Image 1 (cartoon, rainbow, N blue to C red):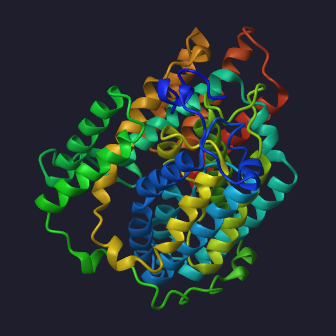
Image 2: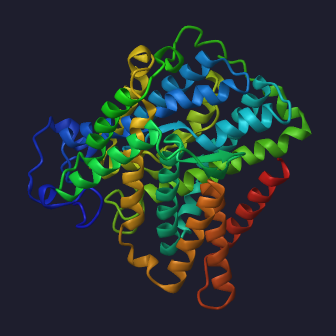
Image 3: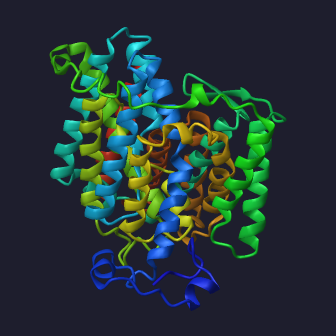
Amino acid sequence: MTRPGSPGSGPELLSREPAAVPGAVDRYFSLTARGSTWQREVFAGTSTFLALSYIVVVNPAILSEGGIPHAAAFFATAAVGGIATVAMGLWARLPFAVAPGMEMNAMIAFSVVGTLAYTWPEALGMVFWSGVAMLVVSVLRLREAVIDAIPAELRAALAASVGAFIGLVGLQIAHLVRTSDGRLSGFGDWTAPPAVALYIGLAVALVLDALGARAAAVLGGIAASALYCVLADIDAAAAAGSVEGGGAALFRFDLGVIADPRAWGLILVLFALDFFGSIAKVVGLSANTPLQDADGKVPGMRQALLVDAGATVAGSAAGSSSFVAFVESAVGIRAGARTGLAAVVTGLLLFSCLFLAPVLAHVPVEATTGALVFVAVKMLTARRPEASGRLGLAVTVTALAVTVVTLAIDQAMAAAFVVCALAGLSGRRRPRPALWVTTVLLVAAVALQYLNR
């Protein structure tokens, strides 16, 4: 049953009887048990796809800067992301989309290849080995142990951090802020068509949300898309992806890179980004939602972690950087996604990009910004009792500040863990040993990232 006040709840949800669906589908996805309907899941899955569709354009554009063939990166993004997201829905039965992480693709293109002069097959080899390590720790349930050790205050902080990250992604795409070397570097043009599209999309979403419309974010995106197409001169040929040449990077990764001691640190950094970043996103996306059970745990978590680790291995073989549970899944969850059926819909739509590239070229990426900022606002303003105490407030403020400064959820997570650990040293509370170990590893991983720059 959906909790009152949680995302997607409201009078219409609490009073409406779920529509009938075939018994096997209902039982498999627990639609009735989770207070959902197949119509709502299809709509929410479509909402998630619309929110993350920019990755099909942006990921190949970034990776091609590092030499990876554009068509290959496009194929890997759509095909591996689509299959992994469907697997997330069918196996883990959670409404999380899986796609290349924006933190990793920039590191591969601009740091590993651009600055350190590794070849792109060597870079993909590093991604492969980091994915294998992720699979190992996921099978051993080490990531689950870390998640179980996270106290309520940290979960609330990570949820806020994910919200801030989603909002910053929207601001970046709308060109309201500029970044340099993965950091905020200044403001952009606040009067250009992308910015106006964000304003319109956000305004429409906020008004519709106030009127109780669950489709607020998506309708705001449609309004922004229509406006942007009028204001901007969209170069469809430049934006279009293509499956022609999509196999150019297939199994081109250089697995022998593991023999280079210089690469070990980079593999560890990629592993740490994936390990802790995925934990922060999964915890943040599920916090204070009906996806959690009575004990605050998320059924299907182990399968979800195995899916994103397997997607990283498969993605490296196809020509992409690491895959993660995508934060834009929050748009679908906000729209009512409660089961894996929403992820199946998202995955099929993502996979269909392989055949709909010419059509997608006419859908402006900037149209998603209003929906992203709207969801960020809702996540940041959600009431979280566990964040109301002094420790909860300190941890949340720290996580938000670090997210804004670094644009890195894993670093925000490290800072939040440090605050909790220091609170333990002061004698106010004794954290679990796993929390201490995780804090040390997080700090070491962040330090290693800076040492490898």
